[in-house]
Figure (cartoon, rainbow over the protein chains, first blue to last red):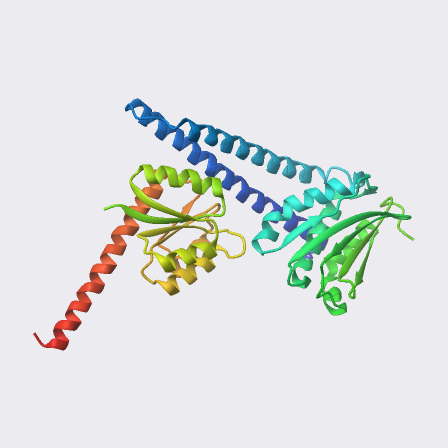
Length: 224
Length: 142
């Protein structure tokens, strides 16, 4: 048995662990609000039993807060579920628009904590390709992590998906400090393996501050 | 005497409801939804305790704690965290945090830690006053 850790497997586990940690933090925050809200209701019940006036408007706003937190947690869990299912098949047909939306949600805590804003310019039409969803999500995660080291002062990154003749592309814009050297440094063994597994190419444009992933229409038929 | 506290968290809903509950327990509660806002508030006012969220956008709790302690070494800071790791806990204590509480926390625990923080602050103030009096007595030779 080899002692060498599989770089792709390691990258995937790291990505999954980071997302899980971030999601559990989010859920804990939501639970903290729900916990305090339940406590508030307890306080109000005790006050009412002692004959004190109950502020009905505050109770109404508390109900809204609780519903909002339940919806928020439901959204977080749904995203976690979508990520988990992206490992179901090695090649499945996906639309890049919802995939990027998912990636914005999954990376939001990490990016916002570091003071960055990540957005996407979604296409009106579906941009469908057949790919390995998990590897693509992992690659986007790594690119976002790299992008945060080469953005301009605005600290904003936009992901713009588009259909191409051979498949699709995702443009990461706002990378004003992108250089040939930083791009080469980014292409570690794990990134190279991931690009190979996805049969895709990465193309930097230092002048425009854009990094593009060129994805084939079908992972099993590499882009020419 | 009413406890004067500052709660710092980027979750506005959390701030709203916990400040209502602590106010109902006869505490004088101020809130800040960002580290920058919190630092501004401790510059302007004195608090018995600060309850500070560990993970916040732009500036995290440990960084905020460090700045707060530099500004006021006697400030009693209780950290609130989603997940309390041993490493973070040790780092927080090294930086001078009084306590670390995991979210979601029982309000009775938070109240208990605030009371403890206030007692610590009183001891510190008394010690300072005592040493100042001793210094005056020595200097004046009474």
